[in-house]
Length: 200
Image 1 (cartoon, rainbow, N blue to C red):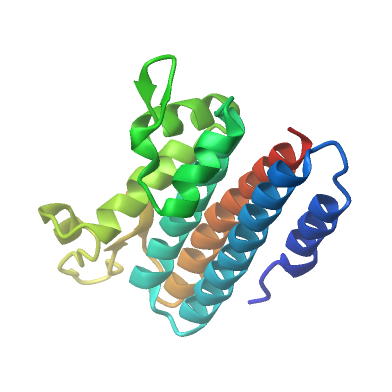
Image 2 (image 1 turned 135 degrees about the vertical axis):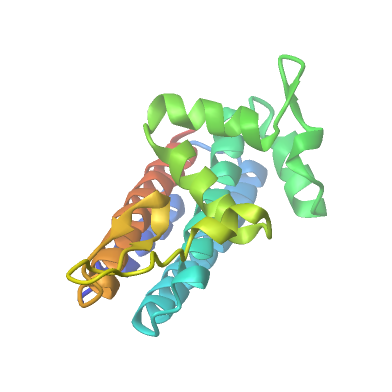
């Protein structure tokens, strides 16, 4: 399978932040540093995702989709915070962003996901699916459930988002297609948010 190329798309974000002239120097340096580190992380996550898909390590590939959504949450927080200096001070210190508030509401994962879901339908579903594969709970028992085959009945495998993959010969292809669809969507959301952050 050939994967979508995102390198040049993310590099274009770096070009755009370099050309930003409307920010005062301190804000420019903070936004530029934040954007560079986010783009590097996003590209590494995507490269890791592709390697894991090629190795048929679906469990870890799914987790990287969730990690990319975490990048989206951080960039979204930087976009909606009116006081950019406060946000970047927290970011530079490595302080949890849920200590920050907007109109008295902390920037929790749920708060940020709700805001993003209004703009990017389906992102919360992808995030919640990723949580099932990251956190060791009884929900994992449902993920690789193989039904006992009876004569002339294909084996079914329950997988990503509860989808039943009936054709074991096409399991890898179908699953990778489903994972890639979601990763591409998350990458596109992240690119949108990065560009929005640059325009602030």
